Length: 114
Length: 115
Image (cartoon, rainbow over all chains, first blue to last red; front, side, top):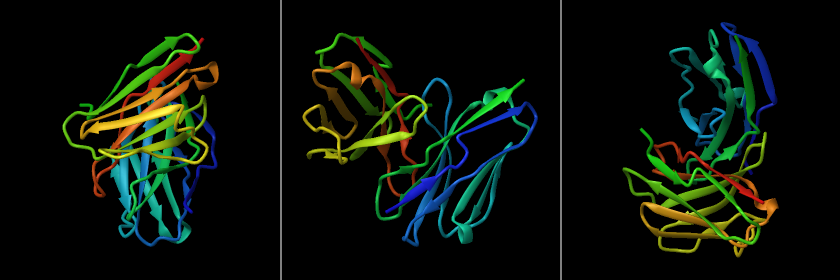
C-alpha cells in the first residue's frame, strides 16, 4: 500500500521568508510519480509539479524549488521569498506508474503574514 | 485556462433533496474521472473512480446507493447525492485522468450545504 506523510500541518511565516514543506512517501513500487498541488482558500487544486521516480534532478520554477531524494523517500518543496499570495494548503501526492489513483498527504497549511 | 469544469460551485438545499454535480473535461477526452470529498482542514478522500461506459468503482465505506455516479460520455461525469442529509455537507471535487504522462486535472469543487 502507498502512503504519503506531510508531517507539518501548519506553517506560519512572515513575507519574504523562505519556507520548506516536507513530504515523505512509502511505496514498494520502483516506478511512480510524485506531485505537488496548491489549494488556495477558494478551493480549487492547482497543479505545481510532477516528478518521475527515475528522475532525481531537482527542479526550480521561479520562487518554487523541489528536492527529490529517493534514498530517503522524500520530495520536499521550498518557497523562496514567500508572498502573501502563497498562503494556501499544499498537498503532496503519489501515483503508481501502473495505476491512475492519487494518494494524497494530509496537506500543509502555509500562512504568509505581511 | 481550466481544463476541467465543475458545476455548480455552491449548493444549499433542504434535507431530503437529491443534488447533482457535473464534472466536464473541456479540451480532452477523459475515460476516467475521480470524485473526492474534503472535510474542513482535511485532505482529499477518494470516493470513487468513474469509468466511461461502465460502472463506477467505489472506495471502501462509500455508499454507492447514496452517491450515484454516471459517466455517460468521454467528457462528462456526474455525481448525484441522493436524499441528502446535513452529514453529507462537504466540499466535493472531481478530477480527470489524462494519461500516465499527465497530472490529474481538478475541477474547482462544489461546496454542498444541506440544511
